[in-house]
Amino acid sequence: MKLPFLISVPHAGLEIPPEAQSYCTLTHEDIIKDGDEHAADIYSIQEEVDHYVTTHIARAIVDLNRRTDDRRPDGVIKTHTCWNVPVYHPPLPDPIADQLLENYYHPYHQKLTKKSKDAILGIDCHTMAAYGPPIGPGENLKRPAICLSDGNGLTLPKGWIKHFATFFEETFGFKTAVNDPFKGGYIIQSHYQEIPWLQLEIRRDFFLSNAIKKEKIIQAFRKIFTFIQETSTSSRED
Image (tube, rainbow, N blue to C red; front, side, top):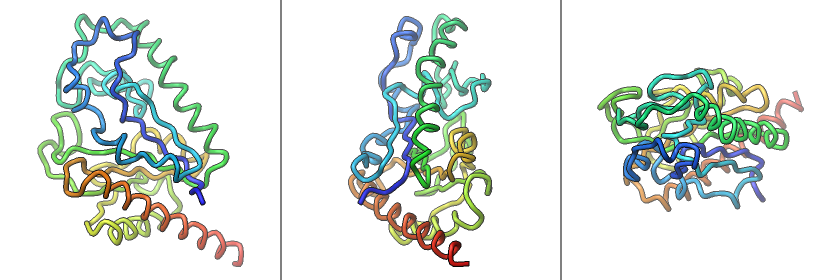
């Protein structure tokens, strides 16, 4: 049985779209380092869930987990990567930035809205650097193996995230942080009124192999599904 979840993997892409190619100065290594390295492998769980949305476009070009008006250096259309590497020379013209939003950003969010109609939970899936980058929470600080986020209680029913953290700790054997260092980005905070949303961050260093991370994520997701089923049944009986 497939899980009735909507999985979002917004930062696994590595492509520079044609609109930006003549301006972008990043190397392939820069693109990899700014994105969610290994996410395409760790979260390759399309056969396990009903709905799966991802993109081939690099996070360094269009960050799908930012507001459209976030024009910081590491915002929706970046001037610098999270490692403070300049993205463009000459600067990207505003009309090109608008094209990127129209061609890649808005369609992604429209897909999430459409697919949420047949899902009971959305999970926005990421990998994180072992230590905080220069532009990002906790510069140079060691990060936990796993971080779950719900916008400090905004995007999930009350109490759910504590149970979810327990499921991940049982499955992975590592302590799972909640809303630290990440509280949850724009995807979960803009779509939670459609269905409940969880943000998942797995540290991308090899504290476990990618294959084992994938296997354990599926196990944890199945525990989450059982919990939601039991909670729904209990609510109907009450």
